[in-house]
Amino acid sequence: MLTAALAAEGAERRSAEVTDWAARIGWVIGLLLFIALVYWLMREGWKWRATLQGDLPPLPAPPEEPGEPRLRLTGRYHGSTTAGRWLDRIVAHGLGTRSRAEMTLTAEGVTVLRPGAADFHIPSGSLRGARPEKGIAGKVLTEGGLLVITWEHGGRLLDSGFRSDRAAEHAAWIDALGAPPALTAPGTPDRTTPQEGRQ
Image (tube, rainbow, N blue to C red; front, side, top):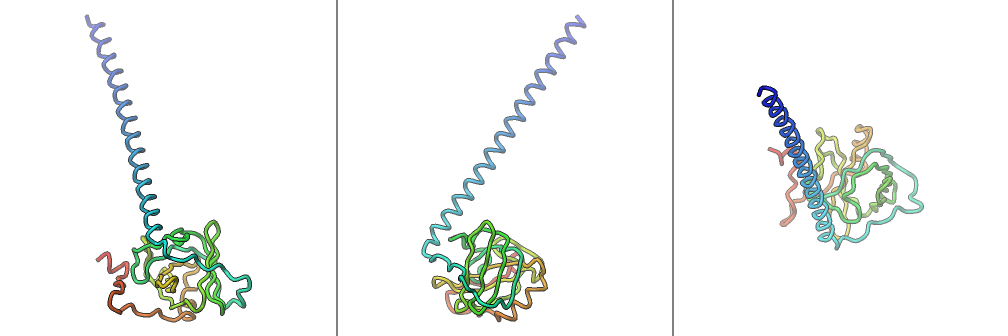
């Protein structure tokens, strides 16, 4: 009797272990499916945003002869937004792709070279200024940790965020490009900073 009872108890334990493994595998599969769904929704949202921004013309290509460099910067490109709206990301023509970047300021404008992403050029006539910021398009840094260049393209004012490997270099770019215009005209977006947006 005792032997039979112990055998039955052992069988129940093995059955419970098998059941637990089945439940765990089910949870893992469910989690993976949920992650895949979230990724798919994000990808579709990205494509939808790019479609909405389809009226934005192609970006100017870097000039073959840009001229004598005035300033250089090596660091990261963190994205572009509608000017004054740090969460309104621009994704058309690869502007939404974060990457390493090498920037050069010449008399022709600002040339942005990005390994693994589309290079682009901001003509001098399109530059509207630069300022320090705390963040852009979901990337929040320390006070003044981001160099934001305001420029015009296709009738839109854009903000593009860069972070130099040597943050002290930002000041020289801000001095060279000047302060951007204040967006105070009727119908222009509110220039709420990342810090203010979290308060």
